[in-house]
Image (tube, rainbow, N blue to C red; front, top):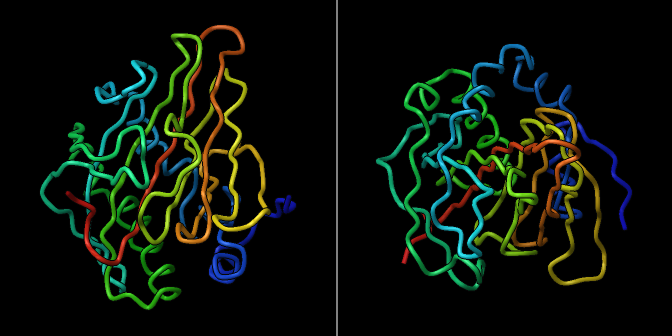
Length: 242
């Protein structure tokens, strides 16, 4: 296992080249965005208004989400595209692949919010410099995994790749839970790392061609709790579709 050493965002590109993943602290990430967790609170509050995920094939009722699609240019310009289904091949998602999944859209004011636009734009620039692509096709997923039923599964499909170029997993918060350990392993090799994201606005970045990833189930510590994340996928060759 690799040791977990949080990196500054300036160190991230080299880590994505060398080992395929990186973690940056809340302080580094928000400083890089030139904002603060306090300024981000209105965005974070929208995780309290996520509809149920109606497509869980394991019969669970533990996941809530909204979804949106964007084009991010290499210079950081962000434009939203018309709402569309989320689709993955069964090669990447054996549980939910091969079907069009329509989720409720991310709230319009969120998509237009300057901090939201800055977040997508700066990550797009960082990854464009690494990959040399002129634009990204970005899918954004607001997730809440809840333990009201006793257990919640952040990745019910298990360890997986997403069929994109890069993935960003941003923790919004954890409340009253245990578990939710992140596991990242080489796609073709023995090495891996296990850790738990705990600080709001800490960020995990993944080179999807190099690594597979999963998060372990969460359980309530007393009353029910939850784990909130923002997952962004960056793909150079257009949105995934049938």
